[in-house]
Length: 88
Image (cartoon, rainbow, N blue to C red):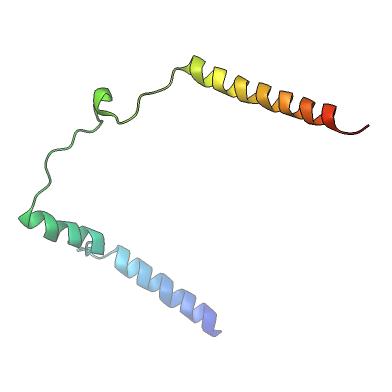
């Protein structure tokens, strides 16, 4: 049996064995957070923040549309000016 097939079979066996284990060890991040929270537990956090506490105000859709159209108009004017100034 070629070596890479044997490695693949060993890896498959290891994965099946690990998946079938009764106790799974937590990840390093989970262990770190558990140790930190043991002495300093986090406070309650709402699932979604209140809209009034959000840092930036939302721009109205009309303002966004006007901004995009203004930029497009500025580019058209700039290209027309460059084309007008170019020697013929």
